[in-house]
Amino acid sequence: MPIRSMTGFGLCENSTPSGTYRVELRAVNNRYQEIQIRQPKWTMNLESKIKKELTSAISRGSINVVVTCDREAENGKLTWDKTSVDNYVRILTEVKDAYKLGGEIRLNDVLRFGDFVKSESASYSDEVLWKHLRPTLINAIKAFQESREAEGAALVKELKKMLKEIAKTLQLVEKRAPERVAEYRESLGARVEKLLAAPPEPQRLATEVTLMAERLDISEEITRLRAHIEKFSENFDLDEQVGKRMGFLLQEMNREANTIGSKANDVKIAHWSVSLKENIEKIREQIQNIE
Image (cartoon, rainbow, N blue to C red; front, side):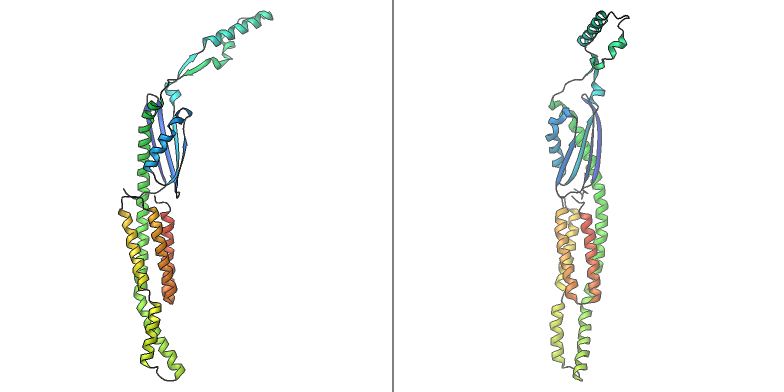
């Protein structure tokens, strides 16, 4: 299963004996699953079945479902209530005779009481209605998933691009790390010589530099960050929902980038650390929309 965005759109329309059904799905990102359904009153008993189909296919997101059916237009048969018409004619005749009114009772007089014209629709059981509606819902979900997969593919493309930027910056940090230790040795030697007016003792200088190098060592952070990048990339090929896992990995990546910046005690590395965190944040914003 390819990575899917939580936003998507799906639509399907299908003619059945009980009417022409139209199912429309729209969704936006959400940490959890929220489903809202609008449907004809006479299909309310099918709501749990509709939700079950959606839940089995979609794990996260705010999903809006609109089910419509022109059942009355397709299957409605116009008829009239003879008893009502008889009563209207009788009442009009009684009024005419009681008040000795002239003229004849005409069709237009009766049509003023238009409620005797009715739509007579066929009746279907819930089982039959579900049999008619379900294929339309399934195809709408299929179109919806295809839409989410297409957007997911675009997201993956952007994520890979940002991961490359992070890896490139990490290479600069790794290359710079030993240089700043050498610079510290030179700077420390110059300061000590200035204070003592004589070259510092080589052994003591080497010891001090070694201690400082240990405090400034960021090799473990670089290794862990690189491992997190590789693990993050593996999610692109997994056949499961990976959005939450990606979020946890990004937290670890950001922690390592912070530590690199704080331990390095170097302007260049500090700036690169900011760049790392900027790209990690960009990725975090993007994965908010991944299922």
